[in-house]
Length: 256
Image 1 (cartoon, rainbow, N blue to C red):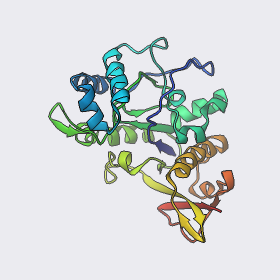
Image 2 (image 1 turned 180 degrees about the horizontal axis):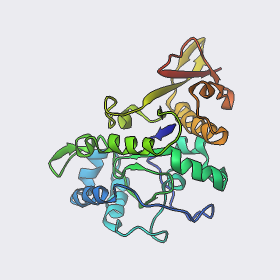
Image 3 (image 1 turned 30 degrees about the vertical axis):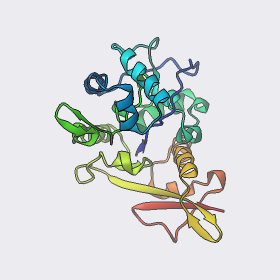
Image 4 (image 1 turned 120 degrees about the vertical axis):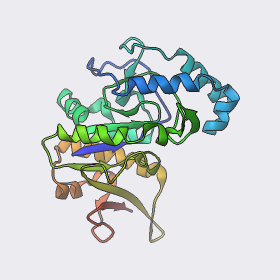
Protein backbone atom coordinates (compact mmCIF):
# COMPACT_ATOMS: atom_id res chain seq x y z
CA UNK A 1 0.00 0.00 0.00
CA UNK A 2 1.50 3.29 -1.14
CA UNK A 3 0.28 6.71 0.01
CA UNK A 4 0.52 9.96 -1.95
CA UNK A 5 0.45 13.54 -0.62
CA UNK A 6 0.78 16.95 -2.25
CA UNK A 7 3.54 19.38 -1.27
CA UNK A 8 3.09 22.38 1.01
CA UNK A 9 3.87 25.93 -0.03
CA UNK A 10 5.00 26.77 3.51
CA UNK A 11 8.45 25.39 4.29
CA UNK A 12 10.22 25.38 7.65
CA UNK A 13 13.98 24.98 7.58
CA UNK A 14 14.56 25.30 11.31
CA UNK A 15 16.79 22.47 12.58
CA UNK A 16 15.10 19.30 13.84
CA UNK A 17 16.51 16.77 16.31
CA UNK A 18 14.09 13.90 15.60
CA UNK A 19 16.28 11.83 13.29
CA UNK A 20 19.62 11.99 11.49
CA UNK A 21 18.45 9.58 8.81
CA UNK A 22 18.15 11.08 5.37
CA UNK A 23 18.09 10.21 1.67
CA UNK A 24 18.57 12.13 -1.55
CA UNK A 25 15.84 12.98 -4.08
CA UNK A 26 15.64 10.38 -6.83
CA UNK A 27 15.12 13.08 -9.46
CA UNK A 28 17.85 15.45 -8.29
CA UNK A 29 19.23 15.84 -11.84
CA UNK A 30 15.80 16.84 -13.15
CA UNK A 31 15.38 19.28 -10.26
CA UNK A 32 18.70 20.84 -11.20
CA UNK A 33 17.49 21.26 -14.79
CA UNK A 34 14.36 23.05 -13.60
CA UNK A 35 16.32 25.29 -11.24
CA UNK A 36 18.63 26.38 -14.06
CA UNK A 37 15.59 27.50 -16.07
CA UNK A 38 13.73 29.28 -13.29
CA UNK A 39 16.89 31.14 -12.31
CA UNK A 40 16.38 33.08 -15.54
CA UNK A 41 12.99 34.32 -14.27
CA UNK A 42 12.85 37.82 -12.75
CA UNK A 43 11.05 38.73 -9.53
CA UNK A 44 8.15 40.24 -11.48
CA UNK A 45 7.89 37.25 -13.80
CA UNK A 46 7.91 34.79 -10.89
CA UNK A 47 5.20 36.79 -9.14
CA UNK A 48 3.01 36.54 -12.24
CA UNK A 49 3.77 32.87 -12.88
CA UNK A 50 2.94 31.78 -9.33
CA UNK A 51 0.33 34.40 -8.49
CA UNK A 52 2.26 35.68 -5.48
CA UNK A 53 3.23 39.14 -4.23
CA UNK A 54 6.53 40.80 -5.07
CA UNK A 55 8.03 40.34 -1.61
CA UNK A 56 7.44 36.59 -1.74
CA UNK A 57 8.65 36.46 -5.32
CA UNK A 58 11.91 38.22 -4.41
CA UNK A 59 12.44 35.83 -1.50
CA UNK A 60 12.09 32.83 -3.79
CA UNK A 61 14.26 34.26 -6.55
CA UNK A 62 16.96 34.50 -3.88
CA UNK A 63 16.25 30.93 -2.70
CA UNK A 64 16.57 29.59 -6.23
CA UNK A 65 19.85 31.46 -6.68
CA UNK A 66 21.23 29.85 -3.51
CA UNK A 67 20.10 26.32 -4.44
CA UNK A 68 23.22 24.19 -4.82
CA UNK A 69 24.49 20.64 -5.14
CA UNK A 70 25.39 18.42 -3.44
CA UNK A 71 22.65 18.26 -0.81
CA UNK A 72 23.90 17.55 2.70
CA UNK A 73 22.30 17.72 6.17
CA UNK A 74 24.10 21.04 6.65
CA UNK A 75 22.49 22.78 3.63
CA UNK A 76 19.20 20.87 3.27
CA UNK A 77 16.50 19.26 5.43
CA UNK A 78 14.27 16.16 5.27
CA UNK A 79 11.14 17.10 3.36
CA UNK A 80 8.60 15.59 5.77
CA UNK A 81 9.90 17.90 8.50
CA UNK A 82 10.14 20.86 6.10
CA UNK A 83 6.67 21.02 4.55
CA UNK A 84 4.51 22.92 7.03
CA UNK A 85 0.97 23.22 5.64
CA UNK A 86 -2.30 21.82 6.99
CA UNK A 87 -1.66 18.37 5.51
CA UNK A 88 1.57 18.05 7.46
CA UNK A 89 0.02 19.38 10.64
CA UNK A 90 -2.47 16.54 10.34
CA UNK A 91 0.37 14.10 9.69
CA UNK A 92 2.43 15.49 12.61
CA UNK A 93 5.60 13.58 11.66
CA UNK A 94 7.58 14.80 14.67
CA UNK A 95 5.52 12.46 16.85
CA UNK A 96 6.40 9.30 14.94
CA UNK A 97 8.70 6.72 16.48
CA UNK A 98 11.90 5.67 14.68
CA UNK A 99 10.14 2.50 13.51
CA UNK A 100 7.17 4.49 12.21
CA UNK A 101 9.48 6.85 10.33
CA UNK A 102 11.07 3.82 8.63
CA UNK A 103 7.61 2.62 7.61
CA UNK A 104 6.73 6.13 6.40
CA UNK A 105 9.89 6.23 4.29
CA UNK A 106 8.82 3.05 2.53
CA UNK A 107 5.11 3.75 2.13
CA UNK A 108 4.67 7.51 1.62
CA UNK A 109 5.55 9.58 -1.42
CA UNK A 110 5.26 13.36 -1.67
CA UNK A 111 4.69 15.18 -4.93
CA UNK A 112 6.75 18.25 -5.79
CA UNK A 113 6.78 20.57 -8.78
CA UNK A 114 10.56 20.83 -8.51
CA UNK A 115 11.62 17.42 -7.22
CA UNK A 116 8.94 15.28 -8.91
CA UNK A 117 8.33 12.70 -6.20
CA UNK A 118 10.03 12.60 -2.82
CA UNK A 119 10.46 10.08 -0.04
CA UNK A 120 9.78 11.55 3.43
CA UNK A 121 13.45 11.64 4.45
CA UNK A 122 14.76 13.03 1.17
CA UNK A 123 16.72 16.22 1.70
CA UNK A 124 15.44 19.35 -0.03
CA UNK A 125 16.48 22.97 -0.30
CA UNK A 126 14.05 25.88 -0.29
CA UNK A 127 12.00 26.53 -3.42
CA UNK A 128 8.63 27.72 -4.69
CA UNK A 129 7.46 26.04 -7.87
CA UNK A 130 4.21 24.35 -8.88
CA UNK A 131 3.90 21.43 -11.27
CA UNK A 132 1.20 23.28 -13.24
CA UNK A 133 3.26 26.46 -13.73
CA UNK A 134 3.63 27.30 -17.41
CA UNK A 135 7.28 27.85 -18.22
CA UNK A 136 9.26 26.28 -21.04
CA UNK A 137 11.74 23.81 -19.53
CA UNK A 138 13.86 21.90 -22.04
CA UNK A 139 11.11 22.29 -24.65
CA UNK A 140 8.27 21.30 -22.29
CA UNK A 141 5.55 23.90 -21.69
CA UNK A 142 4.85 22.99 -18.05
CA UNK A 143 5.66 20.49 -15.29
CA UNK A 144 3.22 17.90 -16.56
CA UNK A 145 4.95 17.76 -19.93
CA UNK A 146 8.41 17.92 -18.35
CA UNK A 147 7.81 14.94 -16.07
CA UNK A 148 5.84 12.92 -18.63
CA UNK A 149 5.58 9.30 -17.43
CA UNK A 150 8.64 9.46 -15.16
CA UNK A 151 6.59 9.81 -11.98
CA UNK A 152 4.26 6.95 -12.92
CA UNK A 153 7.21 4.71 -13.71
CA UNK A 154 8.86 5.48 -10.37
CA UNK A 155 5.66 4.67 -8.49
CA UNK A 156 5.45 1.32 -10.30
CA UNK A 157 9.03 0.50 -9.29
CA UNK A 158 8.27 1.53 -5.71
CA UNK A 159 5.19 -0.70 -5.63
CA UNK A 160 7.32 -3.60 -6.89
CA UNK A 161 9.37 -3.29 -3.70
CA UNK A 162 6.42 -3.51 -1.33
CA UNK A 163 5.06 -6.84 -0.14
CA UNK A 164 1.47 -5.68 0.31
CA UNK A 165 -1.35 -5.57 -2.22
CA UNK A 166 -0.75 -3.03 -4.99
CA UNK A 167 -2.99 -0.24 -3.72
CA UNK A 168 -2.29 3.49 -4.07
CA UNK A 169 -4.06 5.75 -1.61
CA UNK A 170 -4.44 9.06 -3.42
CA UNK A 171 -4.49 11.71 -0.69
CA UNK A 172 -3.04 14.34 -2.98
CA UNK A 173 -4.74 17.17 -4.84
CA UNK A 174 -6.10 16.91 -8.38
CA UNK A 175 -3.38 19.31 -9.49
CA UNK A 176 -0.64 16.88 -8.55
CA UNK A 177 -2.30 13.53 -9.20
CA UNK A 178 -2.85 14.70 -12.80
CA UNK A 179 0.87 14.07 -13.25
CA UNK A 180 0.24 10.32 -12.91
CA UNK A 181 -0.92 8.22 -15.85
CA UNK A 182 -3.66 6.10 -14.26
CA UNK A 183 -3.72 3.71 -17.20
CA UNK A 184 -0.02 2.94 -16.77
CA UNK A 185 -0.05 2.87 -12.98
CA UNK A 186 0.03 -0.80 -12.05
CA UNK A 187 -2.11 -0.54 -8.94
CA UNK A 188 -5.62 -0.07 -7.66
CA UNK A 189 -6.15 3.64 -6.88
CA UNK A 190 -8.35 4.68 -3.96
CA UNK A 191 -9.46 8.31 -3.76
CA UNK A 192 -10.77 10.03 -0.63
CA UNK A 193 -13.25 12.71 0.40
CA UNK A 194 -13.56 14.30 3.84
CA UNK A 195 -16.81 16.25 4.18
CA UNK A 196 -18.40 18.52 6.77
CA UNK A 197 -22.11 18.54 7.57
CA UNK A 198 -23.21 22.19 7.33
CA UNK A 199 -26.90 23.05 7.65
CA UNK A 200 -27.83 19.47 6.93
CA UNK A 201 -25.70 19.17 3.78
CA UNK A 202 -22.25 17.68 3.29
CA UNK A 203 -19.70 20.17 2.00
CA UNK A 204 -16.03 20.06 1.08
CA UNK A 205 -14.02 22.62 3.07
CA UNK A 206 -10.48 22.72 1.75
CA UNK A 207 -8.61 23.51 4.96
CA UNK A 208 -10.28 20.59 6.78
CA UNK A 209 -9.75 18.24 3.85
CA UNK A 210 -6.03 18.98 3.82
CA UNK A 211 -5.59 18.25 7.51
CA UNK A 212 -7.69 15.08 7.25
CA UNK A 213 -5.46 13.78 4.45
CA UNK A 214 -2.48 14.01 6.75
CA UNK A 215 -4.41 12.34 9.57
CA UNK A 216 -5.33 9.45 7.27
CA UNK A 217 -1.66 8.86 6.50
CA UNK A 218 -0.94 8.87 10.24
CA UNK A 219 -3.74 6.33 10.78
CA UNK A 220 -2.28 4.00 8.15
CA UNK A 221 1.24 4.28 9.58
CA UNK A 222 0.30 3.83 13.23
CA UNK A 223 -1.95 0.86 12.49
CA UNK A 224 0.10 -0.69 9.66
CA UNK A 225 -3.00 -0.83 7.47
CA UNK A 226 -2.59 -3.26 4.58
CA UNK A 227 -6.20 -4.17 3.67
CA UNK A 228 -8.73 -1.96 1.91
CA UNK A 229 -11.49 -2.78 4.42
CA UNK A 230 -9.35 -1.65 7.34
CA UNK A 231 -9.15 1.88 5.92
CA UNK A 232 -12.80 2.31 6.86
CA UNK A 233 -11.86 2.27 10.53
CA UNK A 234 -10.39 5.79 10.34
CA UNK A 235 -12.18 7.97 12.91
CA UNK A 236 -9.85 10.83 13.85
CA UNK A 237 -11.22 14.25 14.80
CA UNK A 238 -14.84 13.12 14.61
CA UNK A 239 -14.72 11.66 11.09
CA UNK A 240 -16.56 8.42 10.38
CA UNK A 241 -16.75 6.25 7.32
CA UNK A 242 -19.86 7.08 5.28
CA UNK A 243 -20.90 3.91 3.51
CA UNK A 244 -23.76 5.57 1.63
CA UNK A 245 -21.48 8.10 -0.06
CA UNK A 246 -18.53 5.75 -0.61
CA UNK A 247 -17.72 3.47 -3.54
CA UNK A 248 -15.10 0.81 -4.23
CA UNK A 249 -12.97 3.56 -5.83
CA UNK A 250 -13.54 6.36 -3.33
CA UNK A 251 -13.81 6.31 0.47
CA UNK A 252 -15.82 9.15 1.98
CA UNK A 253 -15.59 10.22 5.60
CA UNK A 254 -17.98 12.73 7.13
CA UNK A 255 -18.44 14.57 10.39
CA UNK A 256 -20.79 17.07 11.99
